[in-house]
Amino acid sequence: QVHLVESGGGLVQPGGSLRLSCTASGIAFSINNVAWYRQAPGKERELVASITSGGSTNYADSVKGRFTISRDNSKNLVYLQMNSLKPEDTAVYYCKMWRYFEYWGQGTLVTVSS
Image (cartoon, rainbow, N blue to C red):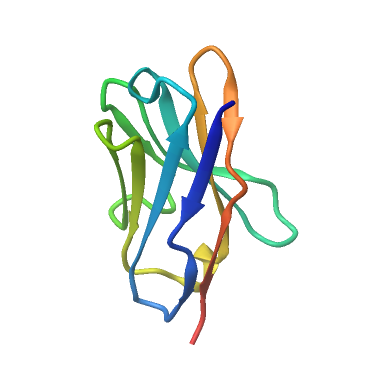
């Protein structure tokens, strides 16, 4: 059974940093693409960043230059380094993996507030 678990969320002041992690089990991690999505209160879920099995990355315009997605296939981990956080980054952040099927984690809450 595939299981994705996000961690690293919390409360941070504007301008601060957080690093989210997503760990996967029950799946051939290295051949799957991975993405971070977020959903703010009252808004639709949106793509934040993605990284393919080959390491190619893609970012939403709103986070370019501030967020970095990376993966460690030896540890079945994906990271989202978030710098210069803004109040509008407040959301539940979800990890998604896909190749032949799609899998989602339960999410981790990030709150950016003074």
